[in-house]
Length: 295
Image (cartoon, rainbow, N blue to C red; front, top):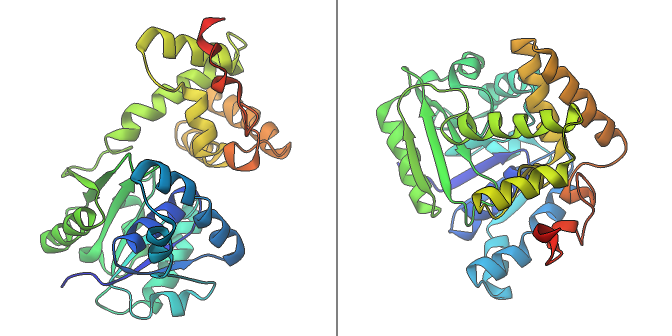
């Protein structure tokens, strides 16, 4: 069975990107979210990036939008879905409730996937009614150019289902990264999360401020961005969810300290790039200064 109808549940930073990327590549996409207006706005903000990075015209971008619909009704969103990608916040109880509800509403044909950054399939598959049709498909931020799709199943995942998802990844111009053993963080976040946690620990301990950490990393390694620039892009609320999850499972005091410090910024409205301020202020962050790395 080739996928035709795709449902994306949750249109945060990554959910909105996944929805549009699939729609742009010819799939019928339904985006499910409790706040449709915010979902539409988030997708529309992708236009300049797609035009700049992929040379899309206004007409090209609109063609993608024409394949995308939005709804607050989960039953309507999945009534004919071949494939549902869940991109909800990293909260286990929220995902548990979602999969139990989804299992009652989705047709038997529907394959379920999670884009969870921190949870492995065995944590969530028990909440779904179709273990052979459940797996994870994890994307990197800015998926139109950082175009990997990490695919990880369980020992119950049907190999044919796994292959269908690999084929879908290719169809939306992703490079499928096939992971055949359950691994927290997949490949990307197994490397990235310890990196950004180390950066935030320097900030929380008062060793160095975010700009200094970013400068050191960029100058020393030649990297185009530093860890705090990445965190602003991902969003501090997502980062807080991840670090809170680490504290809940590992009980390290450092994770609590980082989570508490992030919560202070979130409560002050400093949620990252999308809110206009995170570790940097936008639309003209300090790192855009041509002399940022020289002083």
